[in-house]
Structure formats: C-alpha cells, structure tokens
Image (cartoon, rainbow, N blue to C red; front, top):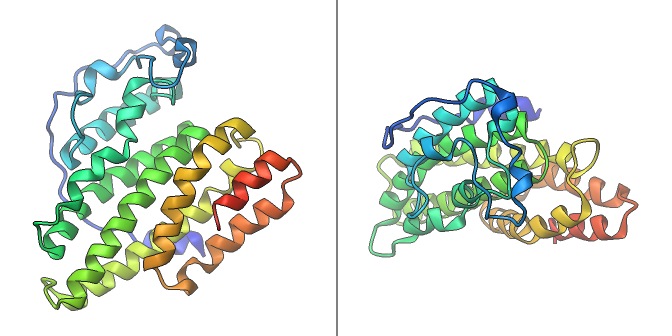
Length: 255
C-alpha cells in the first residue's frame, strides 16, 4: 500500500543549479569519519567544499544542486554523506531554510508555488539518507521534509478557500497526492525507529520533539483517514518498545 502511495504522489517541480558541483573524492578510504569531530554541528564533511555555502538559507536551487552532488557521493561511498555532527548537515536540515516560505506579504497561492519547488529535492535528500545513512540522520531529514509538507498543505488549503488557486481542480488533486506521500514517508520510517537501523535512545530523544511537532502539524491539515496507517505504525512501535526512554520518545511522536 505504501509503495502505491509513494508512486502515486510524485510531483513535478523545476530544479536549478546555483553552485558549481566540483569533483568528489574517489576513495572511500580517504574520507575521514565525520563522527571524529565531536560535538554536533562542529565537524566538517569532506564534501562540504562542493556544496552550497552555509552562511545563508538554502533555496530550492541550493537543495537541487546539493542533492545532485550527494547522489554521486553516496554512490561512491555512503560515508561521504554528511553526518549529524557536521556543519553542513546542520545547515542542510535547518528549519530556517523554510523560513522564507512564511512571508505574509505573499498570497497563499504564491507561497504554495514556492514551497512546491522545494519538494522534489527534499524528497531526493530523504531517499538518499534512508538508503545510505538510515537512523538519526534520516529521521532528521524526515522532520524537515514533513515541516515543508505542513507549510505547503496549509498554503494550498488557504488558496483553495480563497478560490485563488491557479487551477482549483489540479491543486486539490496535488494536495491529495502530497498528503498521501507525507503519510507514507512517516510509515516508512518505522525501521529507523526500531530494529537494526534504529538510532539509540539519546538520539531518538533528541529528534522526537521536532519530528513529533512536524507530524502534529500535518495531522492538523491532513484528513484523519490519510494518516491512520502511519499513526498505527508509530503506535505499534511505541507499544512494542521495552526501553522506557525510547518508548517515551516514540509515544511523543503521536501525541
């Protein structure tokens, strides 16, 4: 069922190039382990020089450029993807990157159009981390992806309510596809909440507030029936968790 929803929910958006891509290291052995850098956000990823600069919000074009580079990096070695303790991962997954989408001076339809440009590269970024770095990193990217969808679906609702959508019928169908896609990605995160790829209790406790808030925002704008399967998956994971700290973090995702 989830695979069907994901396949049905693919949406088109423009992708630009805003940063020179440069070359990648050819040897996985030459890549330093980012975890050696210590505290979260202070390390440097070996692919950082090829990625968009870190001193400003990343745009949709920045994400499109970054995902092209990271796709090549992941194919070379999964270790080349930035980890949680690197500066580039902190910039790449910062909710601040979406802050410009909340401009109240723009009509809801225009905000939705801007948000739609972020969806394809963020979906690709989530795919990459689920494939190459499952666990704490992929859950953090999932939180960002769901935050985007919460904004986007809210703007689409506002545009439809004001009858200012470019094409009400197409926007409504687009909304349904996006809601289904977001719900399916929540359910697909189950292996990173429990099992061999699950992050440890401390990491899960650190991620849960942000991820739970993103899920809550989605629940406010998505019909309950669309979220039912995803929420059942999260509840089952919480109910089956024997560790009290992990169980509390999992329960926080569906409150």
